[in-house]
Figure 1: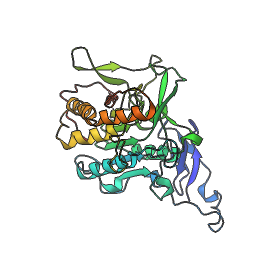
Figure 2: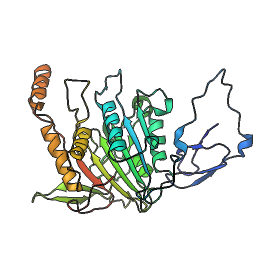
Figure 3: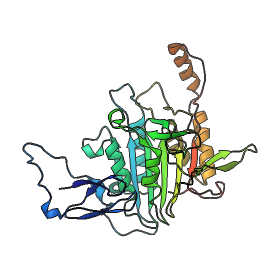
Figure 4: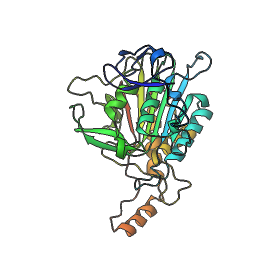
Length: 353
């Protein structure tokens, strides 16, 4: 039986493995001690209150020792908000396409990928706030030098007023789990504390976030922007408060669907079968077309794909205008963003997962 306890320091929910009497928090590294597990209360009778199966998120994936390129582990979230007024068409397609890419292009073992979608029958594999939080903790738990980690999210993103002074624009970016209306959103401060700050030296994490207002959703210190000379340059987004938003020596690079003040789109407003997130589509398309050489080339290709993905975007915008009485914009008004925990030469650094 698994027992849910709160961290003694930061109060984050932790799941105690069987027979253990202590657990280290992946957020603040504090050790929480509990009573002798032999005297923990017994599980209620399954005949009256059946329990869900044990969570798979308590331990790193099983398998042989790390290979030359290290272990590969991924969390993929596709949130469709089915049967609600927030329903999205392409997010589950995004999750399936991203998993296929990681398995067949980058040799991620399927056993080392956790996919959260509303199509899953396992209650622990649905993209609720609690499950996404647990999956993020699983992603970084026990990581070692040489490991390659991926976090992919496709769903709604939003903003809320910053309450601790660490945002340049005064707003925190958020992810919206399937139960966000009742349980709340996942704020960028928590995402940073969970999957960025704990990363030790030698571990690399790539985040691919296909959501509105997602430019700095990992709260990384550096944002890549095009300068007046048409060259990419890094903006320093370290908080003036001095709060540390980097890693514990590891490397984090994030591709996101749009700037913090922009919204993201599906590639098709006309077909629920072929619809995918425009950003996820552009990311995969850039790799499949051989543009994933350097991070600069990758970003250029993604932005080009976004601009060209909707040559039918004029038609989509025209239909929208006719239905809503709005103005004709044309094209997809979003620009993929690149952020990182450390600035680097995007024109020279090879892209690798």
